[in-house]
Structures are given as C-alpha cells and as structure tokens.
Length: 116
Image (tube, rainbow, N blue to C red; front, side, top):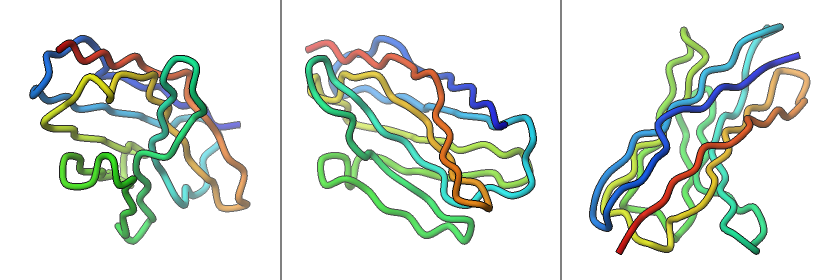
C-alpha cells in the first residue's frame, strides 16, 4: 500500500498563488506518473496536471500557463505551483500516483478556495 499526504491548500484571493505538495509513503518500489486532479462542488473530478518519471508534463487547458507541476523523485513528492488563481479554481485538489505495477492511489484531498 501507498499512502499520500497532501498539504498547501487554503484560502487565497483571486490573483494569488498557492503551492500544493503531496508526499507518498509506504510500500514504494517505484512511482511512475504523479499528478493532481480537482473536484469542484457538484462537478466531476477532472485532471489538473500530471508528470512522468522523466519529467514530461501534461496540463488541463484551464490551468495551462498558470500552473507548474514538478516532482522530487528522491522524496516521492509531487508539487503543484499555481499562479493567477481564479474563483473557478476553487475545488478539492487530489494527489494521485501510479506505481510500477500500474496501481493508482489517491490522497484525501486538500481544499483550495479562491475568493473574488
């Protein structure tokens, strides 16, 4: 089993910035893709950004140019730096990782609220 612990969420004004972190622990052999999804109230969970072990990134169009995903493989940690935040970025943000046998794990989520 792999456990994920997210941090960095909170309340921020529109135009502000936040940095989310997620650290994996437990029975880790190797983590493949790591990423972030988000779920706004009453809406489905959607992709925010992903990053492979080689650092290849993918972003949702809604955050492209305003967000940067990165990872520290030595610390099994993935980060999401978000700038120019908008009220529509308000959501619970979930960390996700895929291990070497393609099992997917999810964190408990961290709330990000952007006030207008």
